[in-house]
Image (cartoon, rainbow, N blue to C red):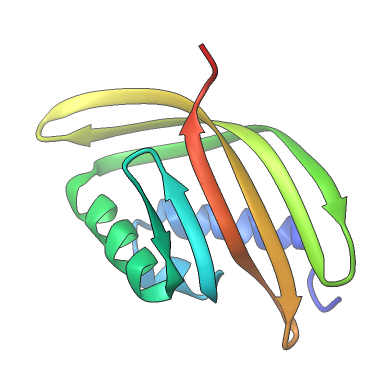
Length: 124
């Protein structure tokens, strides 16, 4: 593997921190599926619209990952789960929201890309 999946994960989190779809785009596979609380998005075009909309309405965003667990790491596939704490300003109101995430990665054509991403709330 050219780059370790752990480093790619860290790079992805840093790309999200820029709030730029252009920075995050390369991490997504063309056929990826992303599941957020408000909907499911299939393919890079739908994902671009969803993430772009999110980035456009949130200001001063912070996203911190904790309890990262690599469930499986193979030559061409990896999956991880984690908890996160998200905070940001929407319409001049500050929000903080803890949650959990799952990422499934595929290694194709010399690079790791997300094939499935799921962010959701913490269990009640």
